[in-house]
Length: 257
Image (cartoon, rainbow, N blue to C red; front, side, top):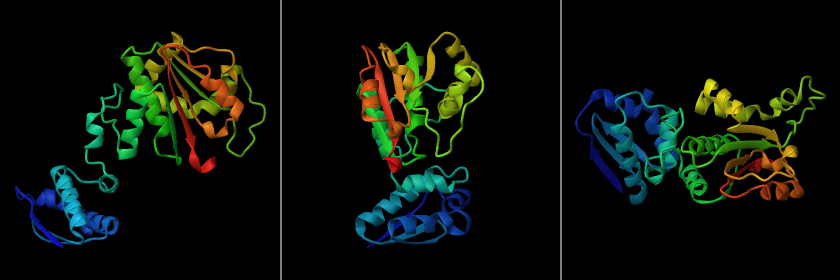
């Protein structure tokens, strides 16, 4: 089926941004949806199965509406996997320093909704998909809204295939290299000065999993990162640390399980 559409109001700059350099964005959509796209000025034609062709035209329209500035290849890819603002529109806006923070795929939207509506959530997926970052963002949001009194971030002290040996310094300096990704997320979402002040008043705590035994965490947002490196006994120990008014998120890299 061939679907035709004329983009209005006619704007050469938007059309240029829509198509991308040498029609690169159109080729990306063609490859992703297995359709054929042709255009003459503002008149576009999509050839393919009816449902797919209509979906491709909807993506083109959504991109055109945002094309007052250059469109990045990443945005086109996100459009292809469903980032049209639909599923995540009903999610609450997270109160962090990042005003543009939101779910960028339907799976991330479901992840954020699960964290918001459940006491314990598990985020399992490949590395680099935003599991830890979004969990920390939800924790920062909960702290800003005063729905929890503190954030507790923990992970097993396990090297990435390379032994670090005995590290110098006090206890904090010894464990900091293992927990650096959590610090990076906090600094990005709250700002360096605000994070330091939160540490001073014990509103944020970052600790290795080994230090969780015997504790009960009430009114806290607890995140266990790199959970694929935990044993069954360690996971049971962590889950039984969750007290009243607490929320927990467990993240793990599925490629290493």
